[in-house]
Amino acid sequence: MLYTPEHHELMASIRRFIAAEIDPFVDEWEAGEIFPAHELFKKMGRLGFLGITKPEAYGGMGLDFSYALAAAEAIGHARAQGVGMGIGVQSNMATPALAAFGSDELKREFLAPAIAGDVVVSIGVSEQGAGSDVSSLKTRARRDGDDYVISGSKMWITNGTQADWICLLCNTSDGPVHKNKSLIVVPLKENGKRAKGVEVQKIKKFGMWSSDTAQIFFDEVRVPVRHRIGEEGMGFIYQMKQFQEERLDGAARRLASIDLINETADYLRQRIAFGRPLLDNQFIQYKLAELKTELEALRSLTYRATLAYVNGEDVIELASMAKLKAGRLGREIADWCMQFQGGMGYTWDNRVSRAYRDYRLGSIGGGADEVMMMVIARKMGLMEMGS
Image 1 (tube, helix red, strand yellow):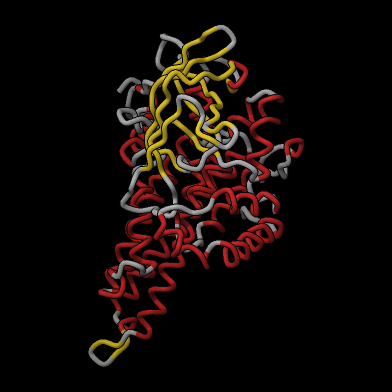
Image 2 (cartoon, rainbow, N blue to C red; image 1 turned 45 degrees about the vertical axis):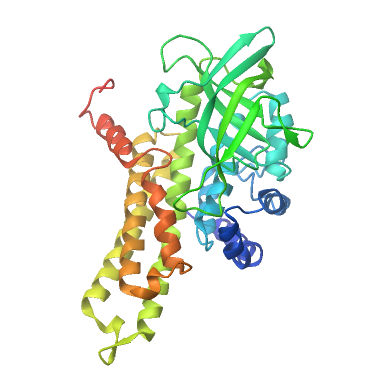
C-alpha cells in the first residue's frame, strides 16, 4: 500500500484547498484562458504545497516523492485540468533538477521563492522543431566571460506568460547531442518588467484553457554562468531524470478521472429514455465497470513506479508505461462519458467536454505516446538505442 494516514491527510488538505480556492473560479479562469498563478501559488506556498519533496533548508517539507504523487492525485480532482498542470510545472517539472543539482546560492535565489509561491516558474525544453526529440533542440547559450548569452526560442511553455524565471535546456557546446546541453535558470522578468531580450507570445490551445501557454524568444539574453544547474553538458541527463517526476505527476492527476465516471453514472440515473433510466442499460453498466477497472490498473502501475522511484530504482520504463496508459485511458474515459451523456455531454461548459479537450494533451505533452512506446521497446531490448 503506497499511502499512509499522513498521505491521506495531505490529500484531504489539498482537496479542501481546491474546494475553496480553485473550483469556485475555474469557469472564470477557463473563459479568460489564464488562472492567477501568483495569487494562487502564494496561498499554496503558505500551506507548503509547492515544496513537498524539496529540502527543508529552502522552505520545503523534505518528504519523499510518494507525497508529491499524493498531492498530484488530489490536484487532479480540480474541475479544470489546466490549473493542475500549472501547479505541476511549478512543483514537479521546473524545480526538481534545481533542487537536486543546483548550487546553494542558486537554490536560495530561485528555488526558495518558488517553494514559497513568491514567483511563478516554467520549464523550457520543447521547441517548434524539437518536441519529443529533445536531443535536436537548437536554442544555444554561448559563453562570454562569466556570462552565457542565449539565443533561440522555446515553444508550448506552460505558465509562460506569467513566469518569473524558466529552467531552460539549451546547447552550451558543439559536442555530441546528449552531452552538449545544460540547464540554466533564466530570469524572464527584471523589476516586474520583461527581461531584456525576452519576448513572450501567448498560444491559444484546443484545451487546458485555464493554463497560460507561450512561445518564448531569447535574443542575446545575458545570464551569469552561476545560473547553470550542476555541470556543463549534463543538462540532457538532468532533464531525463526530471521527466520521470513529470510523467508520474501526470499519471497521478489522471487517476482523478474517476470523478467523470461517477458523475456520468449519477447523470444517467436521472436521465430517462424509453421509460427507464439510461443507467439500467447493461452495456453502459459494463463499460463504466470496465473503465473503472482500467483506472485501477493505472493506479497500480503508477504506485508501483513511484515506490520504485522512492527506493532509488531506474523507473524510466515504468514511468513511461504509466504515462502511456494515463494518456490513452484519460481520452477513453472522456470519450465514453461524453457519449453516454449525449447532447448534455457535448455542451461546451460541461465538465465532460472540458475533460475531453484537456485530457487530449496527455498523449502529446511530456513525450508523445509514440515516444513512450519507443522508450519501452528499448528497455525491452527490442530496439537499438540509435533507432
